[in-house]
Image 1: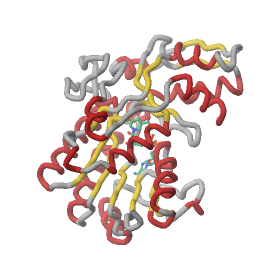
Image 2 (image 1 turned 135 degrees about the horizontal axis):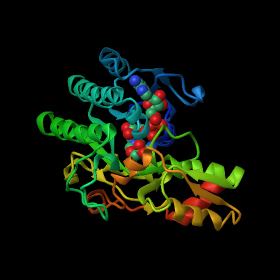
Image 3 (image 1 turned 30 degrees about the vertical axis):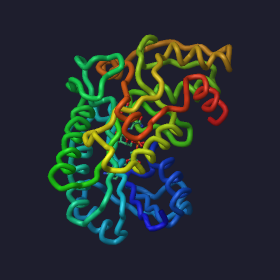
Length: 310
Ligand code: NAD
Ligand code: SER
């Protein structure tokens, strides 16, 4: 285990900051190199460097310098922000992935992780218990980039044997860092508002059901997939991955069990159309069968933990 050297891109973000901590606990502080556009919030936590993933030469240079055995490529633009600047979103999400995949082949990186999303599905995808293999017709630039990215991961595995692994994350809920501009971010903002203002105005309608997951589950599942023997992995595009599904109204009810005076109202904005194009719930039976995935947090347990920590 100690021989692993892991480089993370976009490591200062919502997932990267918690994933880096988990990987450092497991492999040792000096074995994890976090990179991003800026210095991390806690620069003493371990080795870090500046890496703009749009600079292909800089990626190669960092791979040569740090000789990582694994790369987690997390830098990306999330759904709501990408709808505001579609070409920049496509450029970042797509070209950085292609650079990471090609540099990994050229420089002999043995394992790559890249996250896809429920955003890769679209309006005609079956919405309830969305199957692993199904219609994918995303209508957002974010979803188009994730669907294409899944195709490229599968291609690099098939053509070059690159051990690239991927998960279609649902909306991730956490309290340690700010979320990065996603459609599911209401489910984080609501906790801060409930605890400190006892009131929240949701940018999604009351009945908008979306697949979500608490961050500790997401980190545990990611490491589980990366640990799994390669020969057992049937999916090289991206695995469906389910936690818990709920609506803004359902989440507000769960919060009221702890803060009875909490009130919510609804002013849907452009993010409603994005959410309406996504699934309600996910069938993750491939992840369960191939690498033993099972979610640990339900809505009430997650709500209690979030309110205790924010
Ligand atoms: P985030 O927005 O919180 O973090 C992204 C990080 O990338 C930021 O720290 C940002 O500074 C960095 N970055 C942006 N442009 C960069 C560049 N040119 N070079 C280097 N770094 C750059 O995102 P996140 O929530 O941590 O998501 C990470 C990955 O997981 C993304 O691929 C995202 O699509 C995927 N994902 C996230 C969620 C979620 O709910 N958070 C759900 C599904 C998929
Ligand atoms: N949480 C992400 C978003 O809303 C889903 O990929 O963009």
